[in-house]
Length: 458
Ligand SMILES: C[S@@+](CC[C@H](N)C(=O)[O-])C[C@H]1O[C@@H](n2cnc3c(N)ncnc32)[C@H](O)[C@@H]1O
Image (cartoon, rainbow, N blue to C red):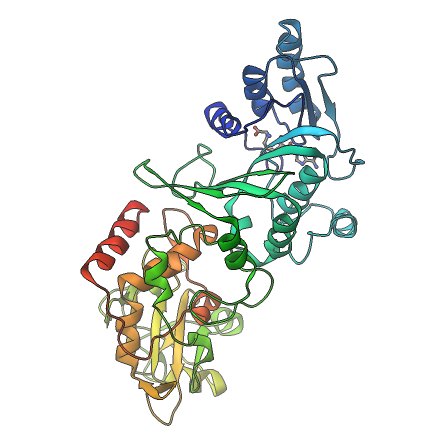
């Protein structure tokens, strides 16, 4: 299967197009695959001109067969056609009343030369952009005034840094009508892709409808007035006072109006800015590949993998499996600066998990790759937050709270790994606000957070 060939189920294409409140006469799917979006469009607006671009001739052939029948029954209007072409390289002629579809998502364009050309030709293709980014930009450029954009995209576009320029550009160029995040449900059978839907119009802006699908196939929705949305989405101020690294802020669709006031109250500097501590990833390449693990070696330091980290304790009795070998007391003889880091008191956090799971340890140890650590200085085990001092144990109880799992999960919907876990990156942790005093939730707030966590499978 070529890059990005995951076809949209017809019922989803129908649901998306149901939200288009106009009668489009000219419709384009710039990466039409077998043509499911155009099919749904023909059902809904018989007689419209349907145009599909598709780079894979075999797949385009399937769409053509279907289209021939549809033209025969007059469900597709004059001029309808499927063209084999690279939609990222062809000229863009605006004039479509609806541009719909599910453009390919892939981290890299296969040919680096093509990637450079795409970067040149698109204002939003910056950094390590996904192909979906220039596709969305082009989709907008193909629109006629008043035209609708209705796209299924990777939900990474809502959060990732590389999509920051696209989010900013969309806010200025089109009126966003709806955003759906479908990360909690399997949209494409068998494919590990978290999807979102963006509906927008080249017209006057108005309210924005947010739709969230939960694990139980429930649907949560709310409306935002545009000014709140723009203010939130463009600011580079983090929700709770920290700063994001670059670009317009993530589109935090999971911060619903019921949850927003709870989050608003969390005040404190970002973890990565606290003096006297550092957030680090676990063991890095050189040590991991070059130093052999030795069972129980007295000169080595014990190794901690994610499986040994439990809330508030390290399960030293759990074996560690590496390269097909099971170790009861795995140790690594590390030297120099890395050893100094290993010997410092640390809070250890599972790097891939459904919930944030943290433990404090003063014992010298080696955290493995997927473990994040918050390292305290030698002088003492307290970090200073404003005028208060924060104890590692206080930090651990904050990290293990429902609220922190909620905060990180709600923001990381586009950075999930299979089976509902997500990647608790060093960066996400550095941005986490740390309240100087223990944060107290009312019973109602606690329930709201717990319900959210349960609904989204955390
Ligand atoms: C994710 S599929 C979606 C297809 C269809 N829009 C749907 O919703 O079912 C994306 C399609 O885009 C095609 N494609 C990939 N790169 C393309 C390009 N540069 N120009 C046109 N089509 C492309 C792939 O072959 C694939 O069929």
